[in-house]
Image 1 (tube, rainbow, N blue to C red):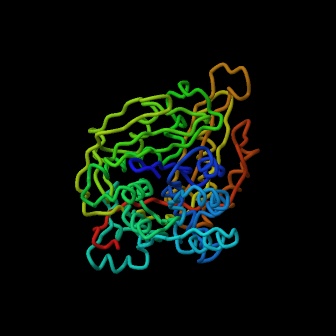
Image 2 (image 1 turned 90 degrees about the horizontal axis):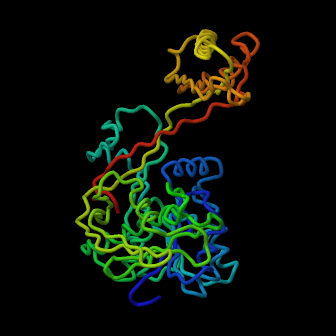
Image 3 (image 1 turned 45 degrees about the vertical axis):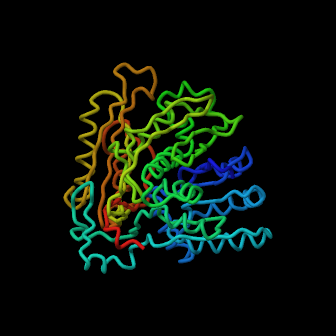
Length: 439
């Protein structure tokens, strides 16, 4: 690792990203740290269901274990650290699995894990201490909902990661941390930053935000996609962070994609609601930074200013809010609106009315053309869905009631699919908690 820069390469932007990306990153060129971000808000409920179905020792991103097998030898040889949030709901169990894998491979790497994000065991205690977990989007108190709570995880910052690296960890397994924390932590470790080094931390936060979603910084999901020379083997992003928090975004040579002012700016603006990007470690003021192309697939970002973080941590809460079922019906020919009304009225009369459901959604999509040249151009879609806390009410019987009308309703009846089991409805509840409660 050089004295004036730390090269951090990210190999994942979500659970399900390219499996070989970790191996490609550590073998494609020199890096100091391999990171992986796997935890979208929905992912926490996927991991929750995994624990229910497979046992309390699960609840982590299992595919990361395959990636560990792919990269452990190279990381040992080249002294590459690994920092990931693949620990999900069970970082300690994942750390143990990694230790077992390393033993089987006869590779000596020190594994650490971070915890403290899971608020479920002490949620009632926190409520008694005055935490109301108000939904920051709807301004609704959590106590006002009767839905079942599935998960409640605080977004931890970077300092636990730095501490683990300070103590010699080679692999740091994290639970729900902020997406950028897996980048801020190694940078703070490398340059021995303090908690009050706000400008430096702000730069690392910007770097972490840019590379956290993988190929979105290197041409993927980019509005001006025609600027991208090739989408074959798109390279994953690397942040070369300097001691003052400035950094350069690049990718390994010989890979597809593009690193330009445009791709970096697009990702910088992704999922932000204000130029002041709030994080539990620092507030990064994105309106103070400069972005410049300094070479092919090399973009330098500098001058980012930071300020004191708020005394709050964000919390990701997921609620089980019922079950949903539905079907898409296809309508063709003349009088599309009349046909849609006919089937809708008939269906809900046959199931006993709309009022018994918590939610009813009926939408007609006029994708048909006036003078179609093919059957496909003649088709409009009527999407009908219902939601209820009672799974039986929206189960196969509801689907069957639709199918029963196939020969007894509008002409040309057919559906895009068949009846299915009701699916669970998960609602995301973002809230804040006083940072004093986060250990």
